[in-house]
Figure 1 (tube, rainbow, N blue to C red):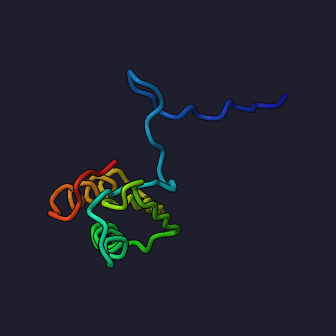
Figure 2 (tube, helix red, strand yellow):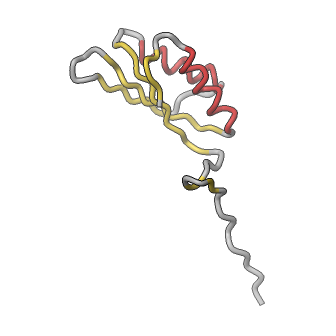
Length: 98
């Protein structure tokens, strides 16, 4: 007789499944276009989580005034995710973050 147990379900909250670590997570930082905003945003993420970005995508707004920088990092805990968001929100060059 096989005693196979079902795989554990990911924890869920009132709005759907919660994050299960480790995972690849995308942070998006939006700021005024400048020569080094993408590097600056990557530095904020790397410093806060002590992790190197796995992938970075930069998009310029249609008017060229803003840059949207998507940064993928491998997170191992909720504390790392929260630390990155704190760093992004505290920085004066970041206009908006997702």
